Figure (cartoon, one colour):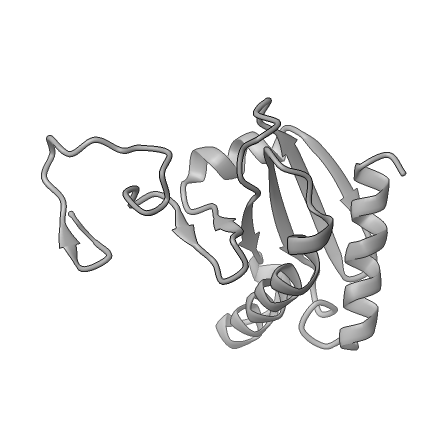
Length: 140
């Protein structure tokens, strides 16, 4: 197995430290990226809030001092591979801009692109939709 310029052996342990773990990659604003299917499945069973351009799932991991983790997904309903990648790029930029300030520690967030909207709506509308969804999820 290869991860981050380092070959992993079967005896290597997976830790929660993002600097040492191949399962979590660090984003630019200190937000960790979800990469494992089990994390996405766990978030899908937790709270969710839909808006016009994005669906947000939030799972409380029960660790009030833990890092914020975020994942991104777009189904084929969003469009072809080009449209899905564009939507995911916009969701990643949105997370860097919004989640670093509004996310609660110890939570996993999954941002899901909506078909035909996430990649084409205005940037301002996308930001407003995420802020509104986070306020609803946080009970404000």
